[in-house]
Image (cartoon, rainbow, N blue to C red):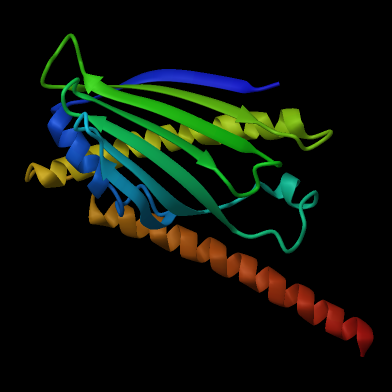
Length: 211
């Protein structure tokens, strides 16, 4: 069984501006989970369409209840393939992304189409679809529910990141302040330190057992 999700979003910027922002959207304060981006293929077709493939590296955080079912050596990073086709003649940009890491545990495929909003031609409309599946026996339903909830949160961050980058491009003050950004980074640092402390405490306890 596959979880399906669809939504429509709008950006208050022209299609041309959004296409430019698409390539400039990392880094932004809402994309701390995106570690690297690399173009692995790009060409302009005879029909004047720009076809690209990128490899993204993202953090791979899992909930505590799931950790006990996963191998201890499981990587904390995930690799994502992103294909895109920019069609300047028809004024559309279509993207397809999917994870190539941990796909048996959870596979997330997303398709987005960026086009001019028919009700306001100075805005851009984004039609988004996602398919979330899992082949992990006994846990597939719970993992799919988790994946769907995380995907919805990711969509919100993606839109805010777009708005942030577009505001900078247009010379406006982004809606998110540096103080808010610093607060989030501090919270993440504190959580990381807490996890490290737990690990050290666990190691110390094991050493005591063998003394």
